[in-house]
Length: 82
Image 1 (cartoon, rainbow, N blue to C red):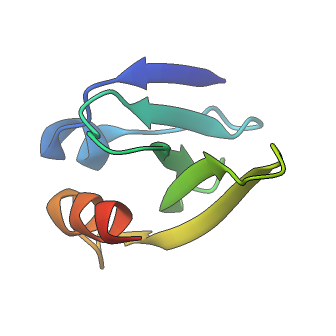
Image 2: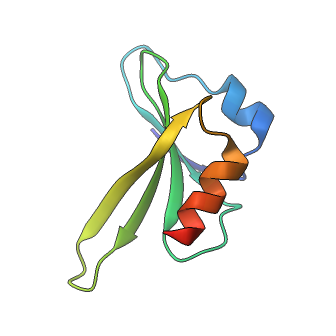
């Protein structure tokens, strides 16, 4: 499942996936080219990723870090600095 929401600390903390489906929340509060996405696995692992398109038009994704070891603020900062 995919949603677009303004990520907040309480939302990230409370995010849970269904028992069998990866949940992705695209951060509407991310102000840079590309998208920051919170991915929540069925087992509860929360991962901040950055998704963008390269010059060839191919979608790329890289992992910024895992919550709670990496805060939302730090993930946004890291995502904008590339």
